[in-house]
Length: 427
Image (cartoon, rainbow, N blue to C red):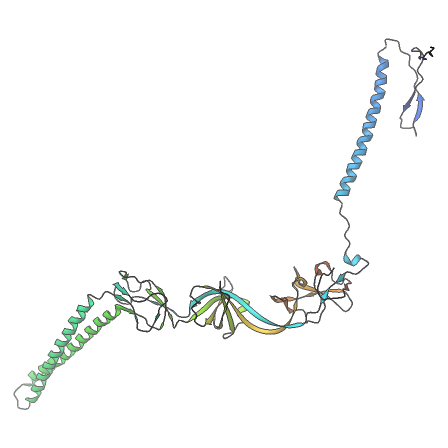
C-alpha cells in the first residue's frame, strides 16, 4: 500500500507569511511582507521580536473594548437619569373633559360651637361663721334637696347653753330691781307735796330707777348675744336648693372663715360655662337658642344664652359664654359638655368638598365661563356639613363649578364639559 510523502517545509527556507501593521498614515489595513531578518541559530533577539508584536496587538484590543464599555455605561446613565418632558393640558390638541355642577342656593343654618362644663348657676359655699367648734352632727348628704333655714350640721354648744341660762337669770334679776326702784321713785313723788322727803332724796330715787332700767337693757343684750352664738352652732341652708358637696364630718373642728362645709346650688339651677372664639362672640346675642351635648349621652339639652363675657382674654383670645339650662338629673355640675348656638339662617351655595382647593393665596374653585375655559374663582368657606362645603362668598349659585380634578387645570385653559350627571370623575 503506497503513501504519498508529506511535504515538509524546509526549516532553512525563508518564511513568506504576511504580517498586518496598523499605522497612523494608512487608510486601511494592508498586508505587508515583513522582511526576514537574518539571525544566527543562537541569536536570542529573534523570539523577542515575535513576542513584542503579539503583546502590542493585545493592548490595542483591550483599549478598544474598554472604550466601548465606557460608552455603553455613559449611555445607560443618561437614559436612566433623564426625565421625560411634561406636556401641560393646554399644550394638548384635545381639551380635557371635566364634570361640572351648578350649586343651587340652599337654606343653611349657621352655628358656632364651643366646649366647656356644666356648673350650678349660683354655687353658694356654706361654712362656720361663728366661734370655733366641733361638729357633733351632720343631717344632709350631697344631692339632697334642702329648704331655706333647714339645719345642715350642728356644732358643740355645751358651753354656750349654760351661758344663755345664766344671762337669762341675770335679766330677770335686773328687771325685778328695776321694778322696785321705779316703785320707790313713784312713792317719793307722792309724798313730795307733804314735805316728807327732801328734793335730794327724791332725785336719788329717780336716778336709781333709771340705772336699774338700763341694767335691764344690758342684761337683755347680753342674753341676745349669747343666744345668737348658740344659733350659729346650727349651720343652716340660707336658700332653697340642692346640696352639691358635703365636707363636714362628725368630730371635725370647724373654724370661722375656713373651708366651706357645704356647697348648695340655689334652686337647683344649672348652666353651661364655655369659652367662645373672639370672632364668634361678636355674632352671638343674649337670648339666642342653644343646644348642649354631654359626653356619652345621645340626646341634646336645649337652652338659651344667658350671659356673654364683657372681656376677651388677651392670651387665648376667648370670651366667656353661659347657657341657661332646664334642671335635669343628667346635668351634673362638673360634667364636660359641647355647646352650639344658632346665629342665623341664610341661602348659600353648597359645593362638594372635592371642588374646593386651597393654596397660599387662599381657598378657590374652578368654574367654566361662557367661553368654555376654566376660570379660577376665590371663595370663602363659611361652614362644612354632610352635603358639602358651604360657600360664604365668591359664588352666586348659578356658576358651573368643576367638581373634581380642578388641581390639574390652569386658569384660562379650554375645557370640554362631559355630558351626563353633574358629578363624577372629571377625567
